[in-house]
Length: 393
Image 1 (cartoon, rainbow, N blue to C red):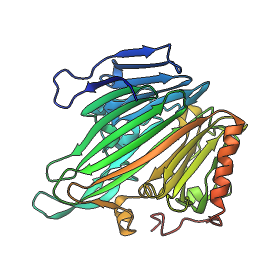
Image 2 (image 1 turned 60 degrees about the horizontal axis):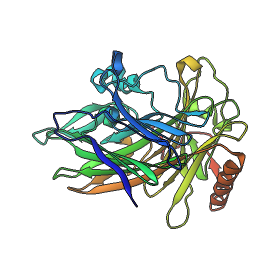
Image 3 (image 1 turned 180 degrees about the vertical axis):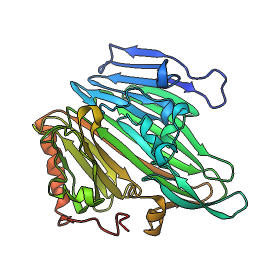
Image 4 (image 1 turned 135 degrees about the vertical axis):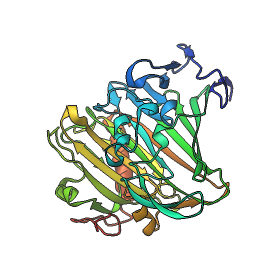
């Protein structure tokens, strides 16, 4: 494979800072362009962006916000959502402790957001060791730190067939967790897909806990009245009594509803024998636009569907959330044996693929795959939260 371009956009320790570039090849079989720049003004001031376009697919990555993906577009279908938070927020302006540990929400507007690395899920108290080795309770904030940590290194590679963006993000502290995320975001030229390969490494000498959840968010027009979420599952259960109110239509969506209170559903998905590969499909009412997630249950054994079909101005959105555990407080997930521990120098690599579909034929094909997987298990829907899945004590 012939390499066209391979260059650093940000080097760890470099005094030069983020590199601004503009590359394009309009004569390639699938015309492409890559542009990097830094936003100015307001809460977005200082946020670095890498904008990638090819064919009818485009998306923008935010190295300043943990290598999350701000927004995308496939043909005439925007990918992402219209958040009350209009601009990417520089982490310097985020106080994660705000509103009882909900400060993460003040920067929440991306299409693709990582939650982790050391903790994720609902805010709550947990027990850690201080610098003297004594146990004490600390408040953990909503969804952890990684989305609000700038990358320390970013590299771009463009080949005959793909555009690859790589980043390195550290969540480290003295007398605490020392975790590093190395991510590769790859898109094949001419496709409507991205593949995200993440490696999390424990840089320290002591074992450390690791959690990861991918918050993949969609609003209108893909989300609309009559839209559906299709996935092969063994079990679905509501997170809480509020979610139980909508269990009859847990996989269906309504129109924007002012005053709607969020609902969430915990899935045990079915995967292929051996690889445990699985999928989740969000499609619009007409069945002619969809987004498809592909991942392995070896990487992400837990899946959450988040529904917030509130008024448009309040954030009409749904989240598809593959994860290492359910988004309960870490203390609860540890008690249930779902929190990963990485030994000294140990790494864990995962992969996820997001495909945009814009034909009924492609969507029917994905639905047929899901139906085939579903044959491996009889689906069960619980009317009430399960003590094994949700913190309902």
